[in-house]
Image 1 (cartoon, one colour):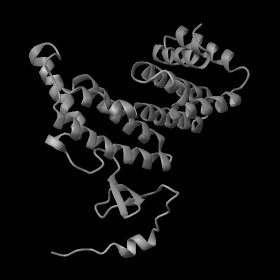
Image 2: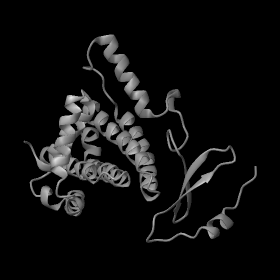
Image 3: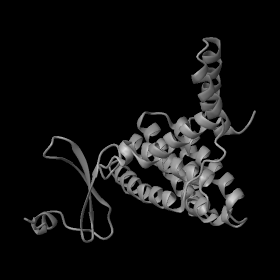
Length: 253
């Protein structure tokens, strides 16, 4: 058995305590991979699929496997009633979520925002699955503590991507939608004071205020005109998006 000393690789890429250091590399097999420098070494992740490259039960992820099990149960029984996740199932799903967490943080540092919300969506779906189907109350609630952070990261990634595309109104709408979703979550699972102390809410509110300053004065008129045109031309998906944008930017009506 042979072993490889990583000392030279670690010296070439020093650890910086106050910085999240991330890079992309091309593997020996020609595949792009993500590396993150941590205090005692280097984490390496696949760029897509499960970050550790595993295929549990021949599925791309455990989430996909349990979703397939849920669909099979519903097809056989005509209902999702009776489907459940054991304590071990939830534990394994949480371990998978921790892998995706590391990767979406890495992609955020790399400013590859669509990949951020791809992975935050994965973890939000794991949270939903455990909340809805875990046998034990503890497992149903465990991941809810992290939902505000996931929503915040998702909103920020979508907002920054919209800014890159030259769409400040869409960026503001994504941020305000994130604020609304976190508020709804805290009202259901948190305490009344959490609405004022939640760091994720504070961050998104600050971002919303900054984006509002960048909005052109005629943005409301422009968006309403675009909505009317989309309806007249029967571009209903775009019309729905613009209607949501108006609601998130300026409130109902």
